[in-house]
Image (cartoon, rainbow, N blue to C red; front, side, top):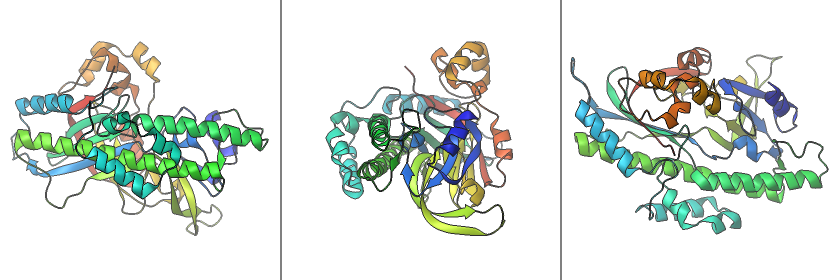
Length: 387
C-alpha cells in the first residue's frame, strides 16, 4: 500500500491511479497499476522490461474430434523438444542474427527514429537476442480452449536492450530532478518532464524498445507456428492474425477521464498512459491474461471502463516473492501441480510454480466490469527459461 500511495502522491499521475486485481509489490513501481500524465514520464514506472507482453494465435484447423486427443503424447513431446532446441531461452541467444532480424531492426529504427543512445547500443547481441525468450516468468506454451482448439502463446519483452535503456534514463531522471531541486529525487519514482530534452529522448527510445519487443514476440511466434506445422501438418487459418500486446509500456492515448461526481460523463483528452503490469482493455479490444505455468490463460475482450483507464490485469499476479516461493513450496508439490503438462519441473523453476501465484479465476471474477471472457485456455506444453 505504501508503494501505491507513493505513486499517487508523487505528482506524476493526474486524476487517479487505477489498481488492477493482480496487483503486487514491484521494483520501482507497483505491478498492476495504470495512470495518466500530461507532464511527466517515469522510466521505473514503465519498468526495465520495456514492452514486455503477450502474443497468442489459434490453430483453427487443429482441433479434436469427439472422443479423441487433439495432440498425441508423442506429438506433444516432439513439439516440446523442438521449441527448446530452436528458441533460445534464459540467458541464451542465437550465435548469429536470425534471417529476418537485421531487416526488422532496420525497419524499427527507421520508423521509430530513436536517439543516438539506442543507435550506439545496437550491438550484435541486440540482433542475436531478437527472437529469444529470456527467463523469469516468460514462457512459450501450447494450449487448448473449451472446444479443444489449439492455441500457441508466449510471454516476452525487449530483452537486454530494454533493461539498459530503462536504467540509463532513470539516471537522467535523477539528474533532472536534482537540477530542479525536487525533494523527491533519490527514490524509485524518478521522473522527467515530457517536454524536456531528456523526456523526449526517453519517449523516443522507449517506443523503439516497445517495437523491438513486439517484433521479438512476432519472430518467436513464427518459429512456434513452423514447429507445430512440421509435427502436425497444420498452420493457423488464413487471415487469422495473432494478438500481440504489451503490458509494460507507455503510450499517448485519447483518454476517457472518469469523474466520480458525474458518473457516466467523461472528459476525453490526450495523455500519456503508463501501464505497469496491466493490459489495455478498450471497448472490443482483444487481450491476453495469463495465469501461472500450470493454470492456463484467458483470451478476453475489453469493456472500455474509464475508471481503470480502459485497462485490466496482465495476469494472476504473484502472492509469494521468488525467495519465499523457493523456501516454502516443496518440490514434490510443484511436480504434482504440473501433472499432465509437458514441461520442465527443474527445482530452479520452483519460484514459478502455480502455488507462487494468485488464483487466476478469482482475479478474473474481480474484473468483470473491465473485460468479457472470450476463451479459457488450458496448458498442454510449457517451456520456460532458467539458469
